[in-house]
Length: 226
Image: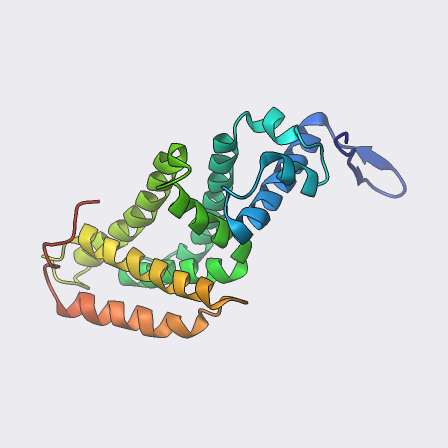
């Protein structure tokens, strides 16, 4: 089945045809959105490139034509999720620093899981499959998760400089713990089925983080330098 032709309406009754680059961008976004939906339902190992193309309304070979390999497509999915989350973070973090920014970043992670459950589910499938059936995407997954940790590390260092938390706190170790707690909550919500309701967790989690960080110094040394 040939790729669909797309057009956009201009002023009045005039129709403006999309350029080839615009059509390609739209179809790529549709392919990625479809991939997130299918992979979020059952994982990448049970989802073929042809199925994604056909479900998106294109030819069975379009995904191979655009991305070359399944691994390239999966990486493009992770890239899209990362771009969306970074845009969300920029709005949430504007004017915030230190512990205020730590709280805002935690809430952004929880809100993101609720606002885009299909993307979130596909990402968590890929995190697991990068350790088993899709090892080629592991470097991209590692980069994503390191980016999450580095964000918290930066805010924790700001909190140190502002005197909000003890100077001897190991910011990297604390960031590993915070990201781990967020992932644990999201994973439990995914397992519960239906809509992921994480609003209830925001106040307890941010309050607990505040209490622990302000009360303690050095984190336990057993945490690895991931």
